[in-house]
Image 1: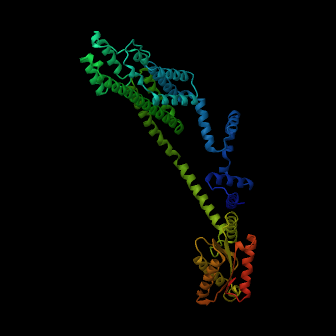
Image 2: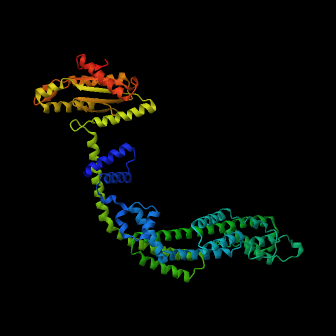
Length: 511
């Protein structure tokens, strides 16, 4: 059996099974047909060609993970290599974990018990090397914290008291501002404490309104007892909360983006080049330097991490040049695919086209009739079938020769194609007999079409080597809804065709 025959069998099987013709589905079906035919195709051997190269343990793992294709095998081996030699691939992850731990420790010293509790939980999970699910839940917890964080308790600054540096809420709730000038109380100490509490704990600067309020209180401590001061305090507290919240969001988002970028580029380095180890070591040294000389604020950490990320990006661009080595193989595979597609198209066309008239052949016509029958049974869409036969065609062959007969068939096929609508299916059913499938057409509409074809043939000039050949056609037509089955429909059209022959030819029946 030849490769062309295997291709034809593949196409036939895909059509019979009604599968979508994707490259993967075609390859699977082609390999199955080749195997059934006893035809060895290298591309169909899959991962079996490499089985002898692996040890017994690796082979068992490949079976366990159900690796079937070459692409899956490559991804499996990359993953296995990463597990076998984790030192260089996990160093960055460990450093990033350590950095996140330091960030959590820094947040722990802030004056918010909820943030401190969440920071302690973060440190615990990082130290225990929690799984991806724990880390994802922890990330969502931090996001929830940012969205619900609210310092509205600072509105209780009407009360002054002792300061608890571990809990800003406790400090604010213990303050007592209910003193009057008549009591002879010195407000200076309280004013200094109040101004300190208005300074954002995270944001680097204060807003102008808060600065002006602080100056007013410093110049005139008794201003604290006025209604205007209460309004300005409420505004200043709300602004302090907003500034701190905005700063935390910016810092966390900026650091999160940098860490994601570093992780993505590291994975890209590992997967794209075998020489990536030396490039990663350079980035590793930069990260070690960052760990040994820790920055004291978000801005410095952001700047230094950005420098490392930029260096890593440059290394990736250099390694990208290595991909050019694979161009020749990709080009070769592309040409091979194009050749197979051309062979497939040629085989498909040959299996459905009449070699002489270039109309659909009997096999294609029967397939289309089956489709129309399915539509009729499912949706009740009726259709008509017309059987057309050239009158006295044997006499044409006997008088003018078979070449003249072929010329007449070709000319008639052109007429039939010209008269047919785009939704109609016309083809050669055998010899000088043709068949037309007229969709969404009743019997009267079909007879109009057939009469147009008959008149066109009657008036046409069929010429061969300067001689005009008189040609006419007899047509029998039938509607699907008038018959109990598709077979009965075709038989009915054929019987009407012979009625036309018996009644003198060159006519359409039923008339």
